[in-house]
Image 1 (cartoon, one colour):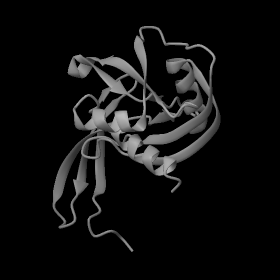
Image 2 (cartoon, rainbow, N blue to C red):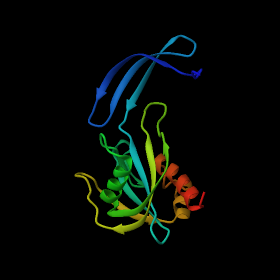
Image 3 (cartoon, helix red, strand yellow):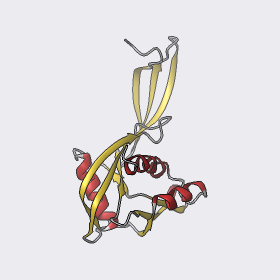
Length: 181
């Protein structure tokens, strides 16, 4: 059965093609039969990792985010390379950014952070059995690593220190996973 809210693509035009992001403008047939325009960003997808230390703390990073002109406290995350397996990406990003490798991995879910203007998806993983192996930051990547308990992270969301959507969503999944659900 066709979704009564479906919008059918009639034409698609690339507006901008960057190294990571691609912007498109599409003509679409709307549910009532009229024609509309949709502009959106195509994104390769990403992962976010909830690294759980043996002592119960989670590993976070502080990173400057240029579009907003300030540093953000967030969980380790990164872009999926073309053809890359999502678990391989999660393993790579955790080690590159935090210097930790995880022995045990669980895929918890997926989120779509910007559904109004992007097709980006972020796959959510939890890593346990952590051991420090040394970070491998990308050129031009600068991070500060910090550790918070789940309760401290939750407080940081509500007092405004954590405002990153992928981190907030992942923390919901972390609560569920740690409650044994």
